[in-house]
Image (tube, rainbow, N blue to C red; front, side, top):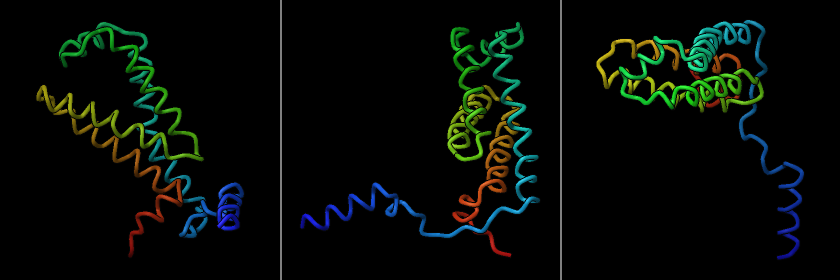
Length: 148
């Protein structure tokens, strides 16, 4: 019994137990650049949105009032947008896309709640976030194997 637990502990420490079950093909340069280009739009839009929230110009403050959110939340949401975006651009992780999804979902829900048709923009940004990651990350492509 002790031998099995030591062997399991050794496998955990050495990382043997954490090896992926599916081998992924390397990413081609075209796929990598397609992913980068697709990812650029949501990255730029969310960085701009975050910076504008930090600067708090009058249209941003009025927009928050229109959506029914207190002005005290503007800076927090700006920092959150920038942080999620910065994590998204780190190529070794997909955590940024996971964090951006509820952020954009909240923006979509806010737009829908007040009847603003710009909710389509946040839905499209979410699709671009995951589409860009799909081309940049072979692990995601292995999870969603589209067949021709």
